[in-house]
Image (tube, rainbow, N blue to C red; front, side, top):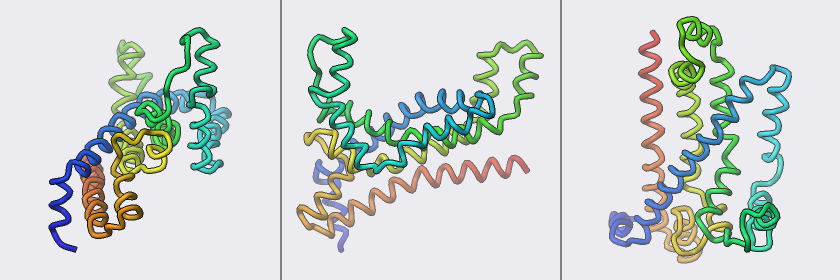
Length: 237
């Protein structure tokens, strides 16, 4: 275990390109999860109280099945003669089957599907506690509904958004199963590179250095979030 192993990470394009690819996919996936998860959480929070629990069960229900089985199911859905292509052809959207597997699109689909509850639950928990009298006050002051949403609802839901983003971004950066099964072999994420160094090359010193650098990268957003939470608590006092 020497510092030469860390120097190798930056001298070999395989490693730093894997880090950059992982950060890119994690950032884009987190944004997609936010764009999809916020409306779902908002709709559940605004639904009648008797319907909120069944709706949340529907969000969590896929987690009752093995994660690996769910990813393998997407292989059948995204293959050339799979359900997705058959549905698109039946609807007349495409004329011939498209290639979904072994692409970044397949990775994004698998990640968004697998991590959606991690985005919905924190945002829902925040929106569910939102004081509706604030929206009524905004309406009494002549604020349109869309403007009240941007000026009242969204700012007050930022803690849930930040928590959901962290819960999604951090594990996605180190994701291995989804890119390995649904993605291609042209460019690997850091989780795949880490597995290759440990089990294929059996270069444990380099693999350990890769893991340590990955851990440092993932600690940074956690520290930033913790600092923001501490400042909010101090301001509240």
